[in-house]
Structure formats: C-alpha cells, structure tokens
Image 1: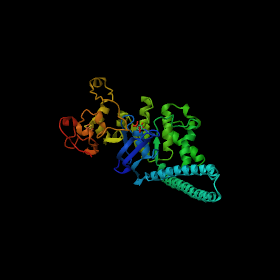
Image 2: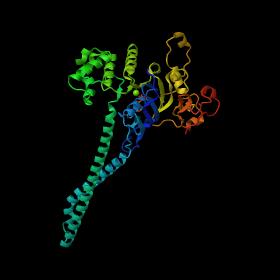
Image 3: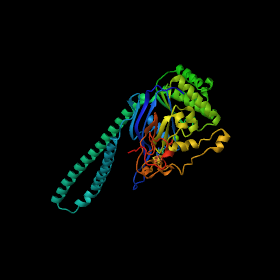
Image 4: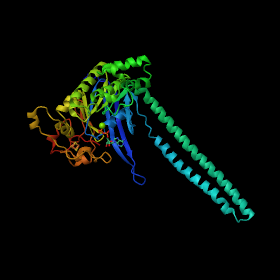
Length: 428
Ligand SMILES: Nc1ncnc2c1ncn2[C@@H]1O[C@H](COP(=O)(O)OP(=O)(O)O)[C@@H](O)[C@H]1O
Ligand code: SF4
Ligand SMILES: [Mg+2]
C-alpha cells in the first residue's frame, strides 16, 4: 500500500474509554476498561493495521478516534486539532443536578404534607396560638417555595450548561466529521434496508451539503462505478446485493464525502474468503487514487499482513507491540504477538504439518478487572513474579519497532533467551 511520508495525520495520546456498567441500586459501579491509555500516531497515507483477539478493544478504539464513542480521557489530534474535549467537569454539574432533584422532591413532599396536615394541627387551639401557627406556617411555605425555586433553577442552569457544552463539542467535531469516516464489519446491518442504494450513498452528501439535485445523482453513480458496482443499480435495495457488493456500498458511502481518514472495522470478516481479497484490493486501489489513510482493524493477522504498512497489536485495552507490518510478522517481539502469528495457518501442507503452535492458555481476562501489572501475565509462558507488579511501557526495542514487556530490551530483544534471566526493561 501507499508509502507514508512521515507526517502524522492522527495522533492519539493516552486515550481511554471506560464503559460504566451499573451494578444495580446498591451495588458498586464498575468500569469496562475497553481502551486503557493508548498512544499512537497514524501517518498520512499509510494503513495502520490494528490486530488482537476479540474483545480486546479494537472497535472501541476505532470509534473513539472518530468520537462515535465518547472517550473517557486522553486526546486525539487530527491535523494538530484536538478532537476530544475534556468534558469530565460536566460530571460535577450532573452530580449537582441529581442532588438538586432530590432536594426539590423533598421540598415538594414537605409542602404537600404541610397543606394536608395544617388544618389538623390548628384545630382546637386558642386564637393566639392559631395566629402564631398561621404566621409560622406561612413563613415555612415561603422558605420552602424559595428553596424549591432555587433547586429548580439549579437543575435548569446545570442542564443548560451541560447542553451548551455538549452542543459546542459536537459542533467542533462536526466540522471534522466529513474528513473522518468509518466502514463497518457487517455490510448488511450497517445499511438501512428501507433505503435504496442511491439514497444510502447520497445521504452523507446531503448531510454535509456537498452537492445538490442532479449533481448528487451523478456523483452517486460515479461512486458506484468507483467501487466496482453497476451505476444503473442506484434504485435497488441492499438485500438485492451480495455480501461483497454490500461492503462496496459501505465503502462508496464512506467515500461520498471525500474523507482523508477511514477506520475500517473488520471490513472483510463477514465476507467469503474469495471476496475478501477483492475488497482488500479495492481498498488499496482507492487509497492510492485518493491518498487515503486507513486504520484497518482485524482479528485476522493474514489480512493485516496483506494490507498494512505498520501494525499495532492490542491486548486488553493496551497496545503491546507496534512496528512495520512485515517486521512484526517476521520477527515478532512479544510473546502475545508470537502466539497470534503461530495460530495463522500456512498454505503449504508440509510446512503447516511441522508448524509449531504456541497455544495461549485460557481466554482474554475480563477488562472489568484486568490482571495487575502486565495484563498478559495470566497467559504468558514467560511470566515472572515482577510481571504481576510492573506495568510495562511501550518502548522502542529496535528502530521503529516497539514492545511492552519488562523482559525485553534493546540489548536483549529475544525473550526466549531471557527466560531464566531477570528483567529487561522496566515499566512503571
Ligand atoms: N457499549 C458498551 N458498554 C459496555 N461494554 C462494552 C461496550 N462496547 C464494548 N464493550 C466491551 O468493551 C470491550 C472491548 O470491546 P470491543 O472494542 O468491541 O472489542 P473488539 O473490537 O476488540 O472485539 C469488550 O469487553 C466489550 O464487551
Ligand atoms: S511483561 Fe511478563 S507477562 Fe508480560 S509479556 Fe513480558 S514476560 Fe510476559
Ligand atoms: Mg470489534
């Protein structure tokens, strides 16, 4: 695929997406740390492959870059503009408005009870006491009304502040939305079955006011042709197309707004093997023609090797290895990457028969409560005691080849040779 020119189009810094899962009314709230402190640069014109087992946070990372999922923390720079606003302070307004709602509810209950029971208390009392009680009653009514009014004002002010800040943040993102597009895994689920293909592809053009009337029709037909579909099929519905053709429609829709950067989330996983190569080739051709930059997400290392210039390996919300795709594939550093590569079947039956597989023990641990230290320590054949205590940093081991393992260093890059020895690099 395209040569990268060294300029970063996207720069991700310490990105976090922690999904809150409510534990119920009396249980503590837990967080799924789907993306947990990812820093990554994506160079203009390159394809960065993102690989890892299912559930390790690839889709969440892709969506968070485009802010289709709201990041919990960190920054994403697109052409040096930060796309992520730190809106964590809005939590304070949320908490204040919840407290104000509770207070308002209590004031309302007291006010209602007071109206119900005031006659009952005043009955049978002499005139003076009735007057005193009546004055106190009126005073209390005034105080409660003022408090209730204040609580409602606080709720309103918090709501207005939250809405305005979210609106401004959305508007800022909208300015960049056109340039940053996504292609989804399931080409059928991501296409509205009630819209014709022409309407589907035209929708983003209309949303961003990029063309009008007959021009849109012509542009849609051109896009159909660009992705290898018959330009006369614009009146057809998604179900009238095959899986591969539907993915081409998804690609045409993404291209409709002339984006610079595309996150392709498992774009070939739902397709037959014979169609996969066609879609990969189409994406490569479009990249060259339109100078596109891709984040190509896949759990399939073979696909990544075929399409990517560089590859980032992800495990439980963190990038654990990053480097040139061919180098990572030929000389992986991390035990995890080695295990993933060893699982890829080799087309030659003789080599395949003698292939030594590294079988990973168990499943990916829960991102709600990831193992301490190096998240991979529960499955790593080279784990030592320190692996449970130290969080490894992603460090450059060889030129432009990074790994996050405390037992690998530039001096001792081969973990097998370090098996009995102590630590290589130390994290934090
Ligand atoms: N909306 C959500 N709410 C809570 N947890 C989620 C949500 N979306 C994804 N997750 C969890 O986040 C983790 C990462 O998911 P995902 O990014 O889809 O992984 P991948 O694409 O690598 O398979 C998984 O444990 C998944 O269950
Ligand atoms: S830090 Fe420890 S557990 Fe993690 S990959 Fe390295 S050796 Fe394995
Ligand atoms: Mg996914």
